[in-house]
Amino acid sequence: MHDYLTVDGRKISKSAGATVDPVALVDAYGTDQLRWTLLRSVPKVGDTDFTVAVLVGRTNTELVNGLGNLVNRVVSMVHRYLDGRPPTGPTGELTGEDDAVVRRLSLAVVDFDFRRASGVVWDLVVAANRYVNRTKPWDLARGGDPALSSVLAGLLAACRRIGVLLVPFLPDTARPITEQCTAVGTADATLPPPRPLFSRVVAPTGAVG
Image 1 (spheres, rainbow, N blue to C red):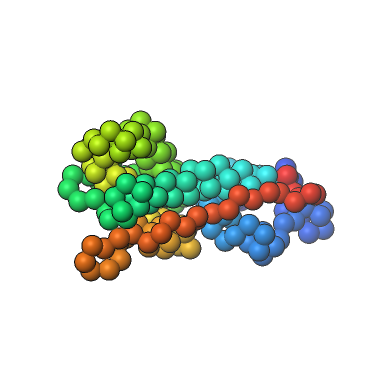
Image 2 (cartoon, rainbow, N blue to C red; image 1 turned 135 degrees about the vertical axis):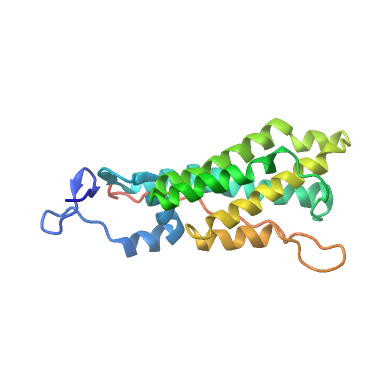
């Protein structure tokens, strides 16, 4: 016996009409969007009900508003306040939990608990977004506060770390995160211009869920 992935409350069955086409989902919403939904929604033990509404919700809330917005804000602020040049020096408090994050992620993967593993990365995204809202880099820049460099260095390091941790889970997303957060050139190297990682999605009429 094993647990089931159900669709709209019913076990997947072609004869009963309870099916969903994964190729169509990827074409409509994206490969990493589907990967993220399954990683974040399916527990190690127990049935899980899949709906397009869940995919749309996680894509818009977590990938667009959470992860995508974080990377875009950080890269944009480095360009706006530091002419695109990554700050050097101390990286602030966000880098203090590197070892703890890696341990939590490794233990979850070894335990084949991919929902818990993706949750570790999501916790890092949430912490970084909260750090942005708490430190308010725009106010630091307006006031000429020297702490701005440390705050942005910490945020940029957090984004790069998220990119690395996402490689086995969302490879198509991890690559552009790393690219956007890595300076190019030799002298006075700057970050590439910010590019949106994701676009908001809408469930089509009649979709499952």
